[in-house]
Image 1 (cartoon, rainbow, N blue to C red):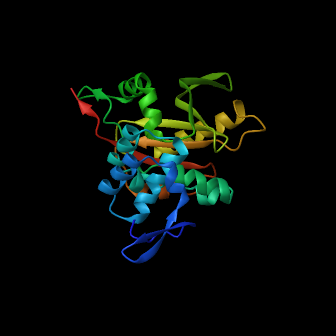
Image 2: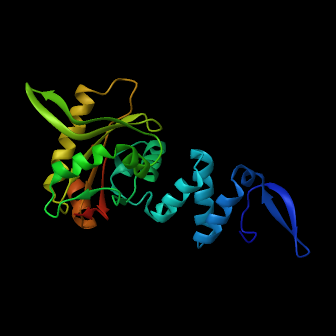
Image 3: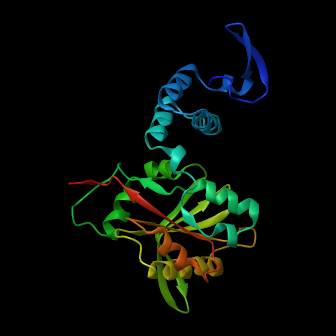
Length: 240
């Protein structure tokens, strides 16, 4: 890590010079360090994976999986309105937890698949999907029914995020982003706030994961919406 780490620790003598040796490194197994050094291109990237390893007690295989998925470059890159619609601490954390793109290479679908097929495949591999989402996610249910004005409404996937202490409405679209998606997601987020959320919970967050998106279209679609929402994409679905 070439002496660029400022974490306090003991001194390590190398070639006549003294470099700070962060004590936190002792919590990461040696072969994890080897993997990180082999795969990471910058010190910041290496420190990101060291932190993830310690926080989540990652096995070497799990560490390899998140490095291959390029978590360092994808975390925190979803298009959101969190900075306007959430208190600073929660908004910053929520932004950091959402990826801009999700790797669904663990599922296989027919060539002409739709949202229902995508949902079914994800539900069948929910443990793997939770790993892709990251830490702190708890799955509540698929096609969660909420009664609004006597009419049943169904949410694609409903989660609860332990660190954010809030429900997360996750809508899936097997096609590129359309501005009308924002209105539907807004409705479901408000419905969860009204019918499911308790006083001890923070405001519900909406996340739309679609096949593709134009960032400008998403930002324009979010204007005037006061519920916290984000949009991300997915890729690498295997086709039968």
